[in-house]
Length: 498
Image (cartoon, rainbow, N blue to C red; front, side, top):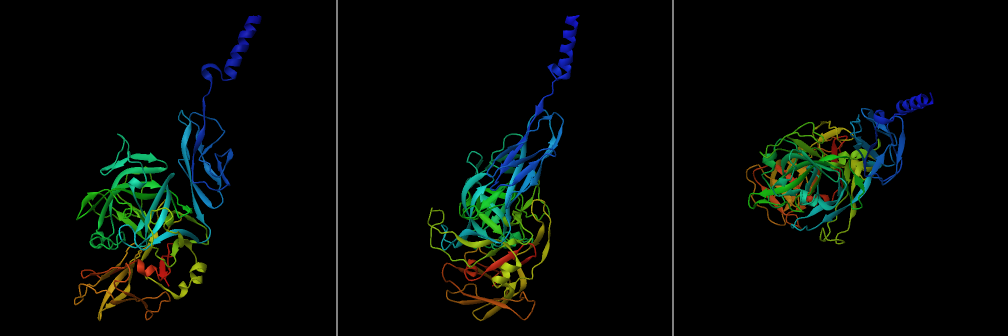
Protein backbone atom coordinates (compact mmCIF):
# COMPACT_ATOMS: atom_id res chain seq x y z
CA UNK A 1 0.00 0.00 0.00
CA UNK A 2 2.77 2.42 0.90
CA UNK A 3 4.51 1.65 -2.38
CA UNK A 4 1.35 2.56 -4.36
CA UNK A 5 0.99 5.83 -2.45
CA UNK A 6 4.61 6.72 -3.14
CA UNK A 7 4.21 6.00 -6.87
CA UNK A 8 1.04 8.09 -7.00
CA UNK A 9 2.82 10.98 -5.30
CA UNK A 10 5.65 10.80 -7.83
CA UNK A 11 3.17 10.81 -10.73
CA UNK A 12 1.30 13.81 -9.32
CA UNK A 13 4.55 15.66 -8.72
CA UNK A 14 5.79 14.94 -12.23
CA UNK A 15 2.70 16.22 -14.04
CA UNK A 16 1.74 18.98 -11.63
CA UNK A 17 5.17 20.64 -11.59
CA UNK A 18 5.96 20.52 -15.29
CA UNK A 19 8.73 17.96 -15.07
CA UNK A 20 9.77 15.36 -17.58
CA UNK A 21 8.69 15.77 -21.19
CA UNK A 22 5.86 18.13 -20.16
CA UNK A 23 8.16 20.95 -18.96
CA UNK A 24 7.77 24.35 -20.67
CA UNK A 25 10.81 26.03 -22.26
CA UNK A 26 10.81 29.82 -21.91
CA UNK A 27 12.55 32.56 -23.83
CA UNK A 28 13.84 36.09 -23.23
CA UNK A 29 13.11 39.34 -25.09
CA UNK A 30 16.00 41.77 -25.52
CA UNK A 31 17.53 44.17 -28.02
CA UNK A 32 20.02 46.88 -28.84
CA UNK A 33 20.03 50.59 -27.98
CA UNK A 34 21.64 53.21 -30.21
CA UNK A 35 22.82 56.71 -29.27
CA UNK A 36 21.16 56.95 -25.86
CA UNK A 37 23.05 59.81 -24.22
CA UNK A 38 20.70 60.84 -21.40
CA UNK A 39 18.63 59.24 -18.66
CA UNK A 40 14.87 58.78 -18.49
CA UNK A 41 14.22 56.11 -21.12
CA UNK A 42 11.82 53.39 -19.98
CA UNK A 43 10.49 50.51 -22.06
CA UNK A 44 7.42 48.39 -21.47
CA UNK A 45 6.10 45.08 -22.73
CA UNK A 46 2.60 45.78 -21.40
CA UNK A 47 3.13 44.18 -18.00
CA UNK A 48 6.70 45.04 -17.04
CA UNK A 49 8.50 48.38 -17.36
CA UNK A 50 12.29 48.63 -17.31
CA UNK A 51 14.61 51.65 -17.12
CA UNK A 52 17.48 51.93 -19.59
CA UNK A 53 20.52 53.84 -18.37
CA UNK A 54 22.24 56.59 -20.37
CA UNK A 55 24.97 55.11 -22.52
CA UNK A 56 23.43 51.63 -22.53
CA UNK A 57 23.76 49.63 -25.73
CA UNK A 58 21.45 46.73 -24.80
CA UNK A 59 18.27 46.03 -22.82
CA UNK A 60 16.52 42.85 -21.65
CA UNK A 61 13.17 42.19 -20.01
CA UNK A 62 13.13 39.84 -17.02
CA UNK A 63 9.94 38.15 -18.19
CA UNK A 64 10.19 34.62 -19.57
CA UNK A 65 7.88 33.93 -22.52
CA UNK A 66 6.76 30.59 -23.86
CA UNK A 67 6.91 29.51 -27.46
CA UNK A 68 4.13 31.16 -29.49
CA UNK A 69 3.61 33.98 -27.00
CA UNK A 70 3.03 37.43 -28.49
CA UNK A 71 5.16 40.39 -27.42
CA UNK A 72 5.11 44.11 -28.13
CA UNK A 73 7.72 46.52 -26.81
CA UNK A 74 7.06 50.26 -26.67
CA UNK A 75 8.57 53.40 -25.18
CA UNK A 76 6.95 54.24 -21.84
CA UNK A 77 8.92 57.47 -21.33
CA UNK A 78 11.45 59.31 -23.47
CA UNK A 79 14.88 60.38 -22.22
CA UNK A 80 15.68 64.06 -21.79
CA UNK A 81 16.53 65.79 -25.06
CA UNK A 82 16.06 62.69 -27.20
CA UNK A 83 13.36 60.84 -29.11
CA UNK A 84 13.75 57.06 -29.18
CA UNK A 85 12.09 54.97 -31.87
CA UNK A 86 11.64 51.20 -31.72
CA UNK A 87 11.96 48.97 -34.76
CA UNK A 88 10.91 45.30 -34.91
CA UNK A 89 9.30 45.75 -31.50
CA UNK A 90 6.43 43.30 -31.92
CA UNK A 91 6.03 39.68 -32.89
CA UNK A 92 5.60 36.12 -31.69
CA UNK A 93 8.20 33.97 -29.95
CA UNK A 94 9.29 31.29 -32.42
CA UNK A 95 11.23 28.75 -30.42
CA UNK A 96 14.18 31.04 -29.69
CA UNK A 97 15.17 34.06 -27.64
CA UNK A 98 14.11 37.37 -29.23
CA UNK A 99 17.08 39.70 -29.69
CA UNK A 100 16.50 41.70 -32.87
CA UNK A 101 14.59 44.65 -31.37
CA UNK A 102 16.34 47.99 -31.85
CA UNK A 103 15.83 51.27 -30.01
CA UNK A 104 17.33 54.19 -31.97
CA UNK A 105 17.50 57.57 -30.22
CA UNK A 106 17.84 60.85 -32.08
CA UNK A 107 18.36 64.41 -30.88
CA UNK A 108 15.42 66.64 -29.97
CA UNK A 109 16.01 70.30 -30.85
CA UNK A 110 14.14 72.26 -28.17
CA UNK A 111 15.61 75.62 -29.27
CA UNK A 112 17.69 76.62 -32.30
CA UNK A 113 21.07 74.97 -31.72
CA UNK A 114 24.38 76.13 -33.21
CA UNK A 115 26.91 73.48 -34.20
CA UNK A 116 30.53 73.75 -35.26
CA UNK A 117 31.48 73.54 -38.94
CA UNK A 118 34.64 74.33 -40.92
CA UNK A 119 34.50 77.11 -43.57
CA UNK A 120 37.72 76.72 -45.61
CA UNK A 121 39.19 79.17 -48.13
CA UNK A 122 41.10 76.58 -50.16
CA UNK A 123 40.29 72.88 -49.89
CA UNK A 124 42.64 70.14 -51.14
CA UNK A 125 40.97 70.34 -54.56
CA UNK A 126 41.63 74.09 -54.72
CA UNK A 127 38.06 75.26 -54.07
CA UNK A 128 36.40 77.15 -51.24
CA UNK A 129 33.99 75.04 -49.22
CA UNK A 130 32.21 74.84 -45.87
CA UNK A 131 32.45 71.42 -44.23
CA UNK A 132 30.12 69.71 -41.78
CA UNK A 133 32.00 67.22 -39.57
CA UNK A 134 30.31 63.80 -39.58
CA UNK A 135 31.49 61.89 -36.51
CA UNK A 136 29.38 58.72 -36.65
CA UNK A 137 27.41 56.76 -39.24
CA UNK A 138 25.18 54.20 -37.57
CA UNK A 139 27.23 53.12 -34.56
CA UNK A 140 30.46 53.37 -36.51
CA UNK A 141 32.81 56.24 -35.51
CA UNK A 142 34.09 58.10 -38.58
CA UNK A 143 36.06 61.25 -39.30
CA UNK A 144 34.43 62.75 -42.38
CA UNK A 145 34.24 66.38 -43.45
CA UNK A 146 31.26 66.63 -45.80
CA UNK A 147 30.65 69.60 -48.08
CA UNK A 148 27.73 71.72 -46.87
CA UNK A 149 25.36 72.09 -49.82
CA UNK A 150 22.36 74.42 -49.62
CA UNK A 151 20.97 73.28 -52.99
CA UNK A 152 21.03 69.49 -53.00
CA UNK A 153 19.43 67.43 -50.25
CA UNK A 154 20.67 64.33 -48.50
CA UNK A 155 23.80 62.63 -47.26
CA UNK A 156 26.19 61.24 -49.87
CA UNK A 157 29.31 59.58 -48.47
CA UNK A 158 32.42 57.89 -49.77
CA UNK A 159 31.77 54.23 -48.89
CA UNK A 160 35.48 53.68 -48.18
CA UNK A 161 35.30 56.30 -45.40
CA UNK A 162 32.43 54.41 -43.75
CA UNK A 163 32.85 50.64 -44.06
CA UNK A 164 35.94 48.38 -44.11
CA UNK A 165 37.55 47.56 -47.49
CA UNK A 166 36.58 43.92 -47.05
CA UNK A 167 32.96 44.94 -47.72
CA UNK A 168 33.36 47.10 -50.83
CA UNK A 169 35.58 47.74 -53.83
CA UNK A 170 35.46 49.85 -56.97
CA UNK A 171 32.97 47.41 -58.50
CA UNK A 172 30.51 47.50 -55.60
CA UNK A 173 29.58 45.93 -52.28
CA UNK A 174 30.22 42.26 -51.61
CA UNK A 175 26.85 40.68 -50.75
CA UNK A 176 26.82 37.12 -49.41
CA UNK A 177 24.95 34.71 -51.65
CA UNK A 178 21.20 35.01 -51.24
CA UNK A 179 21.32 38.24 -49.19
CA UNK A 180 19.85 41.56 -50.31
CA UNK A 181 21.25 43.58 -47.38
CA UNK A 182 24.44 43.85 -45.36
CA UNK A 183 24.42 45.06 -41.76
CA UNK A 184 27.50 46.69 -40.27
CA UNK A 185 27.63 48.63 -36.97
CA UNK A 186 24.10 49.99 -37.24
CA UNK A 187 24.29 50.55 -41.02
CA UNK A 188 22.01 48.61 -43.36
CA UNK A 189 23.33 48.56 -46.93
CA UNK A 190 20.74 47.48 -49.51
CA UNK A 191 21.41 45.96 -52.91
CA UNK A 192 19.83 49.00 -54.61
CA UNK A 193 22.57 50.43 -56.84
CA UNK A 194 21.97 54.10 -57.60
CA UNK A 195 23.61 56.94 -59.45
CA UNK A 196 23.62 60.71 -58.96
CA UNK A 197 25.78 63.65 -59.99
CA UNK A 198 28.21 65.71 -57.92
CA UNK A 199 29.84 69.07 -58.72
CA UNK A 200 27.12 69.87 -61.25
CA UNK A 201 25.34 73.20 -61.51
CA UNK A 202 22.14 72.74 -59.58
CA UNK A 203 22.90 69.07 -58.94
CA UNK A 204 20.07 67.51 -57.03
CA UNK A 205 17.34 70.11 -57.45
CA UNK A 206 13.92 68.63 -58.08
CA UNK A 207 12.80 69.86 -61.49
CA UNK A 208 13.12 66.82 -63.72
CA UNK A 209 16.05 68.57 -65.37
CA UNK A 210 18.93 66.44 -64.10
CA UNK A 211 20.47 66.17 -67.56
CA UNK A 212 20.33 69.91 -68.18
CA UNK A 213 21.69 71.01 -64.83
CA UNK A 214 24.20 68.18 -64.77
CA UNK A 215 25.73 69.47 -68.00
CA UNK A 216 27.64 72.28 -66.30
CA UNK A 217 30.33 71.97 -63.69
CA UNK A 218 31.06 74.52 -61.00
CA UNK A 219 33.92 72.93 -59.04
CA UNK A 220 36.07 70.99 -61.46
CA UNK A 221 34.78 68.15 -63.64
CA UNK A 222 31.21 66.91 -63.40
CA UNK A 223 31.24 63.69 -61.36
CA UNK A 224 28.87 60.78 -61.90
CA UNK A 225 28.69 58.94 -58.57
CA UNK A 226 27.52 55.34 -58.22
CA UNK A 227 26.77 53.67 -54.92
CA UNK A 228 24.35 51.66 -52.83
CA UNK A 229 21.35 52.98 -50.95
CA UNK A 230 21.88 52.47 -47.22
CA UNK A 231 20.04 53.34 -44.02
CA UNK A 232 21.68 54.62 -40.85
CA UNK A 233 21.67 57.30 -38.20
CA UNK A 234 24.14 60.14 -38.76
CA UNK A 235 25.87 62.12 -36.00
CA UNK A 236 27.30 65.49 -37.01
CA UNK A 237 28.82 68.71 -35.66
CA UNK A 238 32.38 69.30 -34.45
CA UNK A 239 31.47 67.98 -31.00
CA UNK A 240 29.11 65.26 -32.25
CA UNK A 241 26.28 67.59 -31.30
CA UNK A 242 23.30 66.15 -33.21
CA UNK A 243 22.18 62.62 -34.10
CA UNK A 244 19.47 61.97 -36.68
CA UNK A 245 16.92 59.21 -36.84
CA UNK A 246 17.57 56.43 -39.35
CA UNK A 247 17.57 57.96 -42.83
CA UNK A 248 18.57 56.94 -46.37
CA UNK A 249 22.13 57.74 -47.44
CA UNK A 250 24.06 56.99 -50.61
CA UNK A 251 27.36 55.15 -50.08
CA UNK A 252 29.46 55.85 -53.18
CA UNK A 253 31.97 53.23 -54.32
CA UNK A 254 32.72 54.50 -57.83
CA UNK A 255 32.92 57.85 -59.62
CA UNK A 256 33.51 58.73 -63.23
CA UNK A 257 34.19 61.83 -65.28
CA UNK A 258 34.25 62.37 -69.02
CA UNK A 259 37.98 63.11 -68.93
CA UNK A 260 39.30 60.51 -66.50
CA UNK A 261 36.88 57.61 -66.67
CA UNK A 262 36.12 55.38 -63.69
CA UNK A 263 37.92 55.85 -60.37
CA UNK A 264 37.57 55.43 -56.63
CA UNK A 265 35.61 58.23 -54.92
CA UNK A 266 37.63 61.06 -53.39
CA UNK A 267 37.39 62.10 -49.76
CA UNK A 268 36.83 65.74 -50.75
CA UNK A 269 34.28 65.62 -53.58
CA UNK A 270 32.33 62.48 -52.65
CA UNK A 271 31.18 63.46 -49.14
CA UNK A 272 28.19 65.81 -49.29
CA UNK A 273 25.86 67.09 -46.54
CA UNK A 274 22.93 68.46 -48.53
CA UNK A 275 20.45 70.62 -46.60
CA UNK A 276 18.36 71.90 -49.52
CA UNK A 277 14.61 72.15 -49.07
CA UNK A 278 13.59 69.63 -51.70
CA UNK A 279 14.82 66.09 -52.28
CA UNK A 280 17.69 64.87 -54.42
CA UNK A 281 16.59 62.40 -57.08
CA UNK A 282 18.74 59.33 -57.55
CA UNK A 283 18.18 56.71 -60.17
CA UNK A 284 19.31 53.33 -61.43
CA UNK A 285 22.47 52.82 -63.47
CA UNK A 286 20.74 53.94 -66.65
CA UNK A 287 21.18 57.46 -65.34
CA UNK A 288 17.44 58.16 -65.44
CA UNK A 289 16.38 60.36 -62.55
CA UNK A 290 13.32 59.35 -60.55
CA UNK A 291 11.09 61.58 -58.41
CA UNK A 292 9.20 59.31 -56.01
CA UNK A 293 6.80 60.45 -53.33
CA UNK A 294 7.74 57.66 -50.97
CA UNK A 295 10.88 55.81 -50.01
CA UNK A 296 11.33 52.22 -48.91
CA UNK A 297 12.67 51.49 -45.45
CA UNK A 298 15.12 48.69 -44.72
CA UNK A 299 15.26 46.04 -45.90
CA UNK A 300 13.38 47.56 -48.80
CA UNK A 301 14.26 46.64 -52.34
CA UNK A 302 12.72 49.48 -54.31
CA UNK A 303 14.36 50.41 -57.61
CA UNK A 304 14.51 54.10 -56.83
CA UNK A 305 14.44 56.45 -53.90
CA UNK A 306 15.33 60.00 -52.97
CA UNK A 307 17.60 61.67 -50.46
CA UNK A 308 16.42 64.32 -48.00
CA UNK A 309 18.17 66.87 -45.84
CA UNK A 310 19.45 65.11 -42.70
CA UNK A 311 18.11 68.05 -40.71
CA UNK A 312 14.60 66.77 -41.43
CA UNK A 313 15.40 63.55 -39.59
CA UNK A 314 16.07 65.28 -36.29
CA UNK A 315 13.17 65.70 -33.84
CA UNK A 316 11.98 69.23 -33.01
CA UNK A 317 9.96 70.67 -30.15
CA UNK A 318 6.66 72.32 -31.02
CA UNK A 319 8.20 75.81 -30.79
CA UNK A 320 10.94 75.07 -33.32
CA UNK A 321 10.54 74.42 -37.05
CA UNK A 322 12.76 71.96 -38.89
CA UNK A 323 15.29 73.94 -40.86
CA UNK A 324 18.54 75.80 -40.43
CA UNK A 325 20.19 79.19 -40.21
CA UNK A 326 23.62 79.89 -41.65
CA UNK A 327 25.64 82.78 -40.22
CA UNK A 328 28.10 84.66 -42.49
CA UNK A 329 31.03 82.37 -43.22
CA UNK A 330 34.58 83.45 -42.49
CA UNK A 331 36.70 81.26 -44.74
CA UNK A 332 39.85 80.03 -43.02
CA UNK A 333 43.24 79.39 -44.58
CA UNK A 334 43.78 75.94 -43.12
CA UNK A 335 44.22 72.31 -44.12
CA UNK A 336 40.93 70.48 -43.74
CA UNK A 337 41.53 66.95 -42.51
CA UNK A 338 44.74 67.89 -40.68
CA UNK A 339 44.16 67.60 -36.95
CA UNK A 340 44.03 71.04 -35.30
CA UNK A 341 44.57 73.02 -38.49
CA UNK A 342 41.01 74.34 -38.89
CA UNK A 343 38.94 75.86 -36.09
CA UNK A 344 35.29 74.87 -35.78
CA UNK A 345 32.94 77.86 -35.84
CA UNK A 346 29.24 77.74 -34.78
CA UNK A 347 27.97 79.02 -38.13
CA UNK A 348 25.26 76.40 -38.71
CA UNK A 349 22.18 76.55 -36.48
CA UNK A 350 19.77 73.60 -36.55
CA UNK A 351 16.12 74.60 -36.12
CA UNK A 352 14.45 77.94 -36.77
CA UNK A 353 11.59 79.93 -35.28
CA UNK A 354 10.11 83.40 -35.65
CA UNK A 355 11.94 84.73 -32.60
CA UNK A 356 15.31 83.74 -34.00
CA UNK A 357 14.75 84.99 -37.53
CA UNK A 358 13.25 88.31 -36.39
CA UNK A 359 16.09 88.93 -33.95
CA UNK A 360 18.57 88.45 -36.79
CA UNK A 361 16.78 90.90 -39.07
CA UNK A 362 15.09 88.51 -41.47
CA UNK A 363 11.81 90.42 -41.19
CA UNK A 364 13.42 93.06 -43.40
CA UNK A 365 15.19 90.53 -45.61
CA UNK A 366 14.12 88.66 -48.69
CA UNK A 367 12.68 85.28 -49.52
CA UNK A 368 11.92 83.32 -52.65
CA UNK A 369 8.39 82.88 -53.94
CA UNK A 370 9.06 79.18 -54.51
CA UNK A 371 6.56 76.39 -55.06
CA UNK A 372 6.01 73.98 -52.18
CA UNK A 373 4.19 70.68 -51.72
CA UNK A 374 3.42 68.42 -48.79
CA UNK A 375 6.20 65.94 -48.13
CA UNK A 376 4.89 62.72 -46.60
CA UNK A 377 7.68 60.23 -46.00
CA UNK A 378 7.44 57.76 -43.14
CA UNK A 379 11.01 58.20 -41.96
CA UNK A 380 10.81 62.00 -41.64
CA UNK A 381 9.78 63.34 -38.21
CA UNK A 382 7.76 65.46 -38.65
CA UNK A 383 6.12 65.44 -42.09
CA UNK A 384 6.67 68.84 -43.68
CA UNK A 385 6.73 70.62 -47.02
CA UNK A 386 9.34 70.38 -49.72
CA UNK A 387 10.35 73.55 -51.50
CA UNK A 388 12.90 73.95 -54.24
CA UNK A 389 15.90 76.18 -53.61
CA UNK A 390 15.61 77.27 -57.21
CA UNK A 391 14.60 80.94 -57.16
CA UNK A 392 11.87 81.21 -59.73
CA UNK A 393 11.10 84.87 -59.05
CA UNK A 394 12.09 87.45 -61.61
CA UNK A 395 15.86 87.78 -61.39
CA UNK A 396 17.96 90.10 -63.53
CA UNK A 397 21.67 89.79 -64.24
CA UNK A 398 23.75 92.85 -65.21
CA UNK A 399 27.39 93.24 -66.24
CA UNK A 400 29.33 95.09 -68.95
CA UNK A 401 26.21 97.11 -69.81
CA UNK A 402 24.27 93.92 -70.57
CA UNK A 403 21.10 92.77 -68.84
CA UNK A 404 19.20 89.49 -68.90
CA UNK A 405 16.27 87.90 -67.12
CA UNK A 406 17.50 84.76 -65.36
CA UNK A 407 16.85 82.42 -62.45
CA UNK A 408 19.15 81.73 -59.52
CA UNK A 409 20.46 79.25 -56.99
CA UNK A 410 22.18 80.20 -53.73
CA UNK A 411 24.74 77.44 -53.43
CA UNK A 412 27.35 76.96 -50.70
CA UNK A 413 28.75 73.99 -52.62
CA UNK A 414 29.76 76.23 -55.53
CA UNK A 415 33.18 77.73 -54.94
CA UNK A 416 32.67 80.31 -57.67
CA UNK A 417 29.93 82.21 -59.45
CA UNK A 418 28.32 80.66 -62.52
CA UNK A 419 26.31 83.11 -64.61
CA UNK A 420 23.68 82.06 -67.12
CA UNK A 421 23.26 84.39 -70.10
CA UNK A 422 20.75 82.75 -72.41
CA UNK A 423 19.98 86.06 -74.13
CA UNK A 424 21.97 86.81 -77.28
CA UNK A 425 24.61 89.52 -77.27
CA UNK A 426 26.29 88.60 -74.01
CA UNK A 427 30.05 88.08 -73.98
CA UNK A 428 31.22 84.49 -73.55
CA UNK A 429 33.85 85.47 -70.99
CA UNK A 430 34.08 87.98 -68.20
CA UNK A 431 37.20 89.86 -67.19
CA UNK A 432 38.52 89.86 -63.64
CA UNK A 433 37.47 93.04 -61.89
CA UNK A 434 34.13 93.29 -63.70
CA UNK A 435 31.28 94.41 -61.47
CA UNK A 436 28.35 91.98 -61.54
CA UNK A 437 24.89 92.83 -60.21
CA UNK A 438 22.02 90.42 -59.65
CA UNK A 439 18.57 91.70 -58.69
CA UNK A 440 15.94 89.50 -57.06
CA UNK A 441 12.44 90.70 -57.79
CA UNK A 442 10.04 89.69 -54.98
CA UNK A 443 10.64 90.61 -51.36
CA UNK A 444 9.40 88.96 -48.21
CA UNK A 445 7.04 91.88 -47.65
CA UNK A 446 5.23 91.07 -50.90
CA UNK A 447 5.96 94.40 -52.61
CA UNK A 448 6.66 93.65 -56.27
CA UNK A 449 8.57 96.91 -56.62
CA UNK A 450 10.91 96.00 -53.80
CA UNK A 451 13.98 94.24 -55.13
CA UNK A 452 17.11 92.94 -53.51
CA UNK A 453 20.44 93.66 -55.17
CA UNK A 454 23.53 91.52 -54.77
CA UNK A 455 26.78 92.75 -56.29
CA UNK A 456 30.24 91.25 -56.48
CA UNK A 457 33.45 91.68 -58.41
CA UNK A 458 34.35 88.90 -60.80
CA UNK A 459 37.64 87.13 -60.20
CA UNK A 460 38.17 88.31 -56.63
CA UNK A 461 39.55 85.84 -54.10
CA UNK A 462 38.85 82.23 -54.99
CA UNK A 463 35.48 82.99 -56.50
CA UNK A 464 36.03 82.13 -60.15
CA UNK A 465 33.28 83.58 -62.33
CA UNK A 466 32.14 81.47 -65.26
CA UNK A 467 29.82 82.49 -68.10
CA UNK A 468 27.40 79.87 -69.45
CA UNK A 469 25.81 81.31 -72.60
CA UNK A 470 23.42 78.36 -73.06
CA UNK A 471 21.50 78.58 -69.78
CA UNK A 472 19.61 81.25 -67.86
CA UNK A 473 20.49 79.86 -64.43
CA UNK A 474 22.82 81.71 -62.07
CA UNK A 475 24.57 79.50 -59.53
CA UNK A 476 25.58 82.02 -56.86
CA UNK A 477 28.32 80.43 -54.82
CA UNK A 478 29.90 80.54 -51.40
CA UNK A 479 31.01 84.16 -51.73
CA UNK A 480 27.38 85.19 -51.16
CA UNK A 481 27.39 83.36 -47.83
CA UNK A 482 30.46 85.23 -46.58
CA UNK A 483 28.43 88.44 -46.40
CA UNK A 484 24.86 87.24 -45.77
CA UNK A 485 22.85 85.39 -43.18
CA UNK A 486 20.67 82.72 -44.74
CA UNK A 487 17.85 80.55 -43.43
CA UNK A 488 15.55 77.81 -44.61
CA UNK A 489 12.37 76.67 -42.87
CA UNK A 490 11.24 73.23 -44.05
CA UNK A 491 7.91 73.55 -42.25
CA UNK A 492 6.72 76.86 -43.73
CA UNK A 493 8.49 76.42 -47.05
CA UNK A 494 10.47 79.66 -46.86
CA UNK A 495 14.09 80.53 -47.26
CA UNK A 496 15.64 83.95 -47.17
CA UNK A 497 18.65 86.08 -46.43
CA UNK A 498 19.67 89.42 -45.00
